[in-house]
Length: 228
Image 1 (cartoon, rainbow, N blue to C red):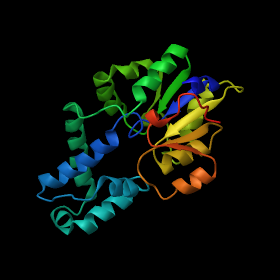
Image 2 (image 1 turned 180 degrees about the horizontal axis):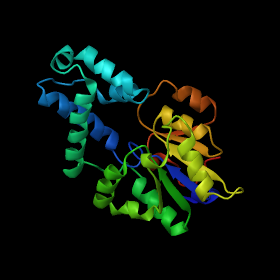
Image 3 (image 1 turned 90 degrees about the vertical axis):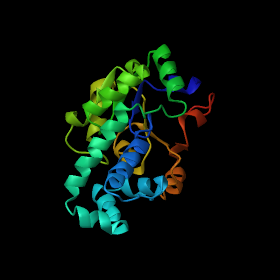
Image 4 (image 1 turned 60 degrees about the vertical axis):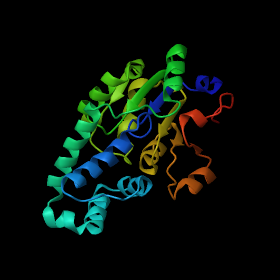
């Protein structure tokens, strides 16, 4: 992992990038629907392509696909509260797993003593549950959660805050995201943006054409090639 030494600050999203919590969110929606007698058979990749563009898009799509769900409960906030309970149950059941290559990278950054920070829209309550289950995250000294900034991604506020707090003007910064929405937040900063995802988002060819690095997982990043 010689390339890590090219940068003085690493920025990471959390859900779907470091841990499989995007799958947990998906399972929580499935559980919420099942508890109301509705089978949610929307595939995970299609779920990602809807949920990662707008919060309203998912509610509209689920109501359209499953009219029985809307007939039972037309107020989305009620269903979303049930989904939030389902995700907390799944987290406490230990469903969260590290994404491929994450532990190796975090250990390498710790050994090299390179500054690193998680920048996430997840609440501290969720983060604390995951950190108790995966102590590798204790190697990350800085965390910016949704309580610490105002505008969600794709606004760059959260990443700009991390850079202002942790990077010197001359430092090279690199950031990792797993969705086009998150990547756009990075693009509004001086950090080098890297997309890590297996979902086939339609924007990926244009990102690659713009020389934005894209890998399916952290494990797929070459050991000896710098991300330049």
